[in-house]
Amino acid sequence: MILALFCLAVAVIFFFYLKFEYSSYVRTIDLIPGPPKVPFFGNALSIPLDPYGGLQKISVEWPKTYGHFRRGWFGFKGYIDISCPLVTEEILSSQKFIDKGKDYDMLMPWLGEGLLTSAGNKWRKRRRLLTPAFHFQILDNFFDTFNKSADILCQQLQCSLSKKAELNQTEEIEVFPYLKRCTLDIICEAAMGVQINAQIEDSEYIYAVQRYSMVLFEYFTSIWSFLPQRIYFMTKHGKEYQKCLKIIHDFTSKVIQERRKEIDQELETKEVKEKQDGPEESQFKSKKRRAFLDLMLIAAKEGADLTDMDIRNEVDTFMFEGHDTTACAAVWFLYCMGIHPDCQELAREELNDVFGDSDRPCTLEDASKLKYLECCIKETLRLYPSVPHIKRYNTEDFVLSNGFKIPAGASYSIHIYTLHRNEEFFPDPLSFKPERFYSDQCSGRHPFAFVPFSAGPRNCIGQRFALYEEKVIFSTLLRRFRFTYNTTNHGPAKACADMLLKPHHDMPLGITPLKTKEIVREL
Image (cartoon, rainbow, N blue to C red; front, side, top):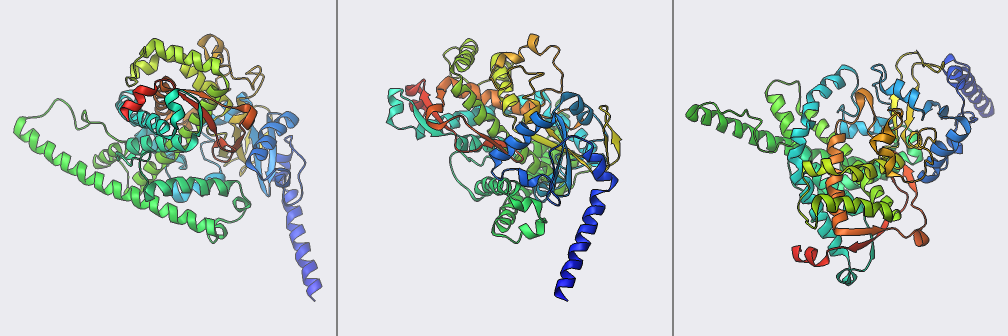
């Protein structure tokens, strides 16, 4: 009887498997070139479990073998992997492909239906509402925050150096944690208007944000990502995920409540002042720097369709998108500078032309002059895009311009990491050549060959904010220190990817102070 039941169960499983395999959905996707698949597992078993090996298999080996438009199966999930500019443009420019892939579901408990994860009309309304918050005139107000945090970063690095620093000798430091705390300070002040001093002191919130990011990273690179989330939440890591999430949400909700009270008081004071002194020329969007949270609270008070949950979701989205992403870009930039000292010196010469021997803060006007530094940043983002791939979900049957039909329910994966290393558009793609981004060399290049901040309707709303932030941080660091990376001792740095592209191991950079006495005097 037991054997008969077992055989029946196996027969039923294979019946439904074969029914799935011979469905029009599967057969349509399988017309696209791709690696051979294994029953039930698809291509999952051929992907190394370590995140570096996984990136090499999916984003390096498969494109070479199957081309820049291919398909892959992870269990019963079909993916259309794209790394050619023509199809990338077709997907990212379309209003039909604005829904994010199902892979973003794990972010929903944190971000809810914020700008990153929302879809349809809700996303469109929210995008229109938030776009003015990133106008360059508003971003100019955050340069004080950028400079202050960059200066503290330099001081923290200096404090971590030993007595060798006093002799202007080089010492290695694992820089990634310092960069993450610096960008966390910046985004907290910009998004919420609060100073958490992450670079100087610890707090429960800082620990929760950093630990949550690590737990999320571990989830995406483990077998748990293939199983139902409710099973994962029963594990030790799943419970830690929920604990950290509660701390983050409680902190954000508390800040929102406090800021609302402060804004209400400001409005009352303004009304009294106007009655006493007459209307002022400036509106309530005053000269005072406003965090993104303040702008949303004011918009809600003026009638915008924003609940407390909506506001919290958007603040948390800014925290997610503006924290680790910028830190990842920063660590890869310093690595590229470290292994290309000639480029680092050219960047430093440009800084000398703009700043002279001064350590003064970087202004918006200064940032606009740093053309070569911007080329170095873009070339870093070409080789090491902070977001190595983005997902879209197809809700209806669609025929692409290359002739392939994509069935409803399929997911697209735009492999930015591979797209940026396409030798048809970037000759000698593995070499670091900032001059690729001089205006004369960019002319004629396909506009979707380089999309580090995505492109089209769902491009990154904060890309100008991120670029200014990076220019300030890097211009400050390169005026204070020289960076090197010892490939003999450590070998070339390896990248690994889940949601973000991070160093596979530590990133120990050799740091040599250029102005030791001045920095010590500041401390």
